[in-house]
Image (cartoon, one colour):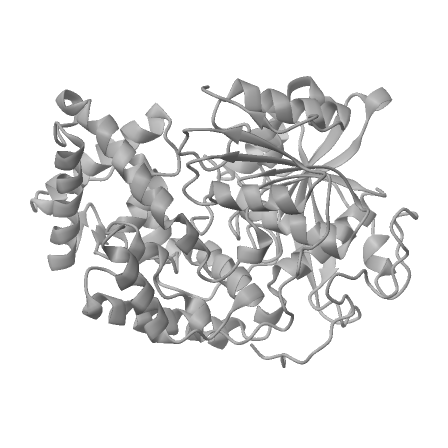
Length: 515
C-alpha cells in the first residue's frame, strides 16, 4: 500500500537563502536553457552520477529486487544549506529504471511515494508494472528525499517510531501527549540541531532540480502521491517551466499544509470506520466482531477502554490508548476487501488482548507496532516530523489543541483525539523560510478518491479550481488513499497512463466509478 501521510533549530529565522520564495537560484540559468547551472551551484548540477547495483548486503531484499529488475542506484551530492554551496554536503539516494523505447523517449519521470519522509527507491517497481508499455518511454527515477532511507540519515534517537498518536480519552491523556511531544522535539534539537533547519520541502525541491540537472534534462515529469503532491506543487512554484507531465495523486491543497494537516481528515476517518464496521458486521460468522455496525463499533470501543485502563499485551509489544488508534488510522487507508479483512483480523487479536488473553500479532500488526512503538522506527519518524516541522512549525498554544479535540469529540469520538492532537511542531524552532505560496497555474493531472482518509477530496477540488489548466480524475464512493497503481481502478489507471503516454490532459474532468 501507499505510504500514508504521517504513517512512513540553530539558524536564525531571518537568514536569507540563495533560493528565495518562488525564485530560482540567483546564479542559475533561466528555465529552458541547458541543464547546467552557473557557479556556485554549477558543480552540483554538472555532477556525474555513478550508477551501480542496488544491493547493500545479503539481507537487503529491496536492493535484490531492484537489481533483479535491472534498476540501478546512485547517490547525488547536494549542499546541506543552499545559501552556503561551498559548505557541508549530503547525499540523496536515487534509483533508475532506464527507458527502453529510445525512439519515443520522453525523459526522466521522478517518483515520490509521500510521507513526508517516505522512502522511494522501489517506486520504479511499484508503478512500472501499472504503466505497462508507457514505462518504456521514461527513465523511472526513485528518490529517498534528503535525510530519508538511504540518503544521509537523520535519527533523533527516539524510543518510538512516530510522533503521530492519540491524545487518549481524557485530559490526563492529553497532558501525557504534551509531555511526550515536548520530549521528542527536544531530542531532535539535542541530537540534530545543526541540520534541522535544512530538513524542509523547499530544500527537497532544490535537490530535485539538482537531480534534474545531473540527469541532463531540461524538464522532468513527476508522479507524486499524498505529501508528494505538495512537494510537486512546491517544485513547480520554485522552478517554473521545469516540469513536463505532472500527476498528483491524493492531493494536498498547499494552502492547508500545516502541522495540524490531519485535522481535515477527521470526518473522513470517522466515516471510514463506520463503513468498515458495516463490512465486518456482514461477515460476523468469519470475524465474530458483532452482527451490526453498532456492535462492531462497540467492540472497538471496548478495546480502546481496555487499553486506556492498562496497555494491551500483544506479543512483546505494549499498546496503550495513545497508539491503539494509530493502528485503526493505518488500517482505514483503503477500503479494499483485503485491507478490510486485515483490519478485522487485527481487531479480533486486539479484542482477545483486551480480555487479557495471551496473543501474538500477525505479520502486519507486528510490523506496524515495531515501526510505531519502538526505536526501530526512529529514523523514519524523526525525518517525517523534521520535514513537517521544518516547513510549518508554529506556536499555537497548548490549550488550542485541547479545545479542538473537545469541540470535535462528540461528532468524531474515534478520530478527533488523534487528528487534532498536539504536534511536536508546537515545540520546534521556527522555520528558516516561510512555506511556499503556491499561486501559479500548472497543467497537471490530479487524482483523488472522494473518501480519502488522509488527503481529503476537498483539497483536490481546491487545487483543481486554482489550477485552471489541470484536470481531476475522481473515484467516487471510495475510502482510498492513493489510487493509481494501488486501488485497481482500471479507469483511473488508464487515464493516468494515457496522459503520461501522450502528454495531453483529458478535455474535461473524469469520474471513474467502480473498480
